[in-house]
Image (cartoon, helix red, strand yellow):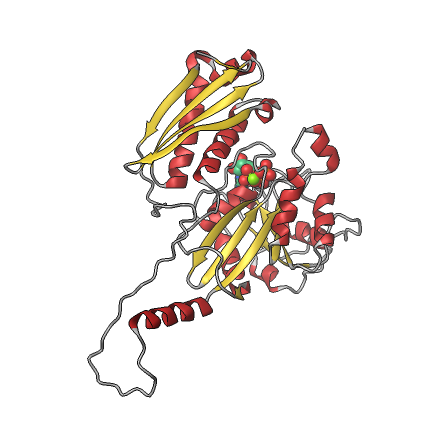
Length: 379
Ligand SMILES: Nc1nc2c(ncn2[C@@H]2O[C@H](COP(=O)(O)OP(=O)(O)OP(=O)(O)O)[C@@H](O)[C@H]2O)c(=O)[nH]1
Ligand SMILES: [Mg+2]
């Protein structure tokens, strides 16, 4: 058995909530204040618990929400964007494609408004599913997310000069299929652009120049001189985006404007989640997905996609999360690759996942990662 055990007792200031997943408890403020004045009221006297119920109902009547499906090809930064816009790490991220394999829900409650983001696996064609041995859930996950959404945010990597000028065919197909839903174009990674001059051209190309008069574009500071624009009539653009946003999910630039916009779009209706919840994922799932995401970062090529990660143990004691994950490797050679010289790589991976989990849970985390190959646990 090769395992590395690490305790990280960092306490993350940013995450001040004890529970990250649904507790099912909605807290009510039962405090009442007396002004001391004797006011005659024509309304019938109200029993204290009824009064509380009425207050609660009034609060619920003021509630607003918006459900947003974030879609795009792999690695454009969907999960990083969602973590940063809700200001909590709940979606595992990595530098490799296909990190997100099923739809994850991330929740931001601000004032009377709840924004529910659906993180989705990168959009892939049937050919890509076969080529990379991906689960069919890659397709069903984003369909499920969109079916529950009020608005679609299409994310495009503005820094990738190979792919940025056209929307992926699967993105176009999705937008056509769900044409009744409003959609936004979110150009991400603008921090990585050497010159911002390409952005105007990019917006025109991806929207077929249909957003000329939209206010969102006016808000963006773009070079004043005209850039040669060639209208793209091929099916690589979408004419019906409501607005375009330029953001950097890493630096946070543009995220507040987008958040304000989404809050303005929210519909009056009761929230689905309590105000202090950031995701509906179980901690067990978040742990396993976080290990898998970091294996992608540390291992070359296709290897990490063939590894099976399982939760062996999870317990919380005295505000410390104790957990253990088993990584099943197809061969001893791959196990050696994960562990590295004197277990050095496994130690690095464990440290990295531990700090991800500390950020997620806002609690100390004690994580063990154990590897296994040939169907037998190595001792
Ligand atoms: N420079 C820069 N890098 C970013 C930005 N947003 C995300 N990234 C990086 O892009 C890579 C992919 O990010 P993810 O959030 O995992 O991308 P994803 O779209 O969720 O990927 P899949 O789950 O595989 O579909 C990571 O290395 C991120 O650090 C950004 O605004 N600027
Ligand atoms: Mg992702």
